[in-house]
Image (cartoon, rainbow, N blue to C red; front, top):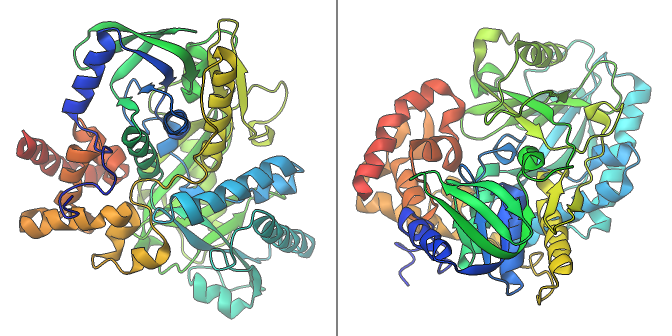
Length: 517
């Protein structure tokens, strides 16, 4: 295999022709062991889990990989510190274990250590600071209990006021007593993680089918519609896993969810000056909630997030209300020496968490522990949880499906199965290609870079001031299952988070599809 022109994991390529062929096989009556509905992180994870146990798998989504909640996160793989503080020890430990698996075994190319500073401003009392300091030390104990190396996640420590402003010069100096430095995992891109999981599942034989909408579910399959043609067909399966997230209740009766909206603002990096770390800014009146300032390394910074209940129908793409924007700007202004105005925003996005309904509790207080529910006819539904623990959620869902339908399957292997592009840090560091590509594609960065070397027009950024190149768009069409411009701009890359950048990039996206026709 030529590494400059092919994926590093044979059989992992997703494209329109493979989708057409595999959907036709299912339409002809081919039965699979497991049908997974939903291709967010958990659904893609379930497809990979089942496939690596030796089961035949089809995984479908009405839209695209990572179309729903999985692309609207804070891009963090975190160790569960918040859950430790609220007494959810099992959730906190599970988060720390899964963080370590991603950072050291399955996806070290996509998750890196990110420093965070909690500034000790006049609004942070000494008792609250002491509590936060104890929390960070406890979080480090979680890291050790999860057997995550100190090389992967350095120790927390206390900073002087000078050191704190070195990390974040935009902080207001008046009354600043110092800061608390901690470390957590940060994804290069949450949607890229989902894409890598789905492609790895495909390499193990799973049929990964986007634009395939489930109309009806039962214990032995589903009636679906090919959204590209309007044709309806029935997929036969021995077991069905409903991993549709906030839409899960619409497919299986009796699933009661209480979605919670998490909103992020998008700023240009220059709006906040040089940031050498992310920031935890305490929310006034809350002892264990923070607004996060998250530098992305691509000229953008995210500020989030809210935790507000959402009533009524679940939209495909949630809107961002002005109340959320005002709240986040107010908290940001409580700690910064620069004023961020509404007009400084270049974008905003919101995701809906699929939380189990808990009567009377605030969504901010509902446990993030996931739940696996089996309906009377055998459909397994997995809800709750969070991006960090997607692998464990998938494992539990497949365990339940295997048990409910008495499938012959091997044990779960996904804690040790590297995702496409993964390699140890030393190998990644030795790749003679731009470091930014390595952080997004791992060992496949060589093949993406080679496209630009072969055709220099593909090596240029598609938007001035943003690093994504035409080569990355072409790779997404050929190998990552992108079927239209929205797939390219809104999920395979994150250009679309800034509407003005998206408008500029649309021509390049159309040209890529013409290039591959």
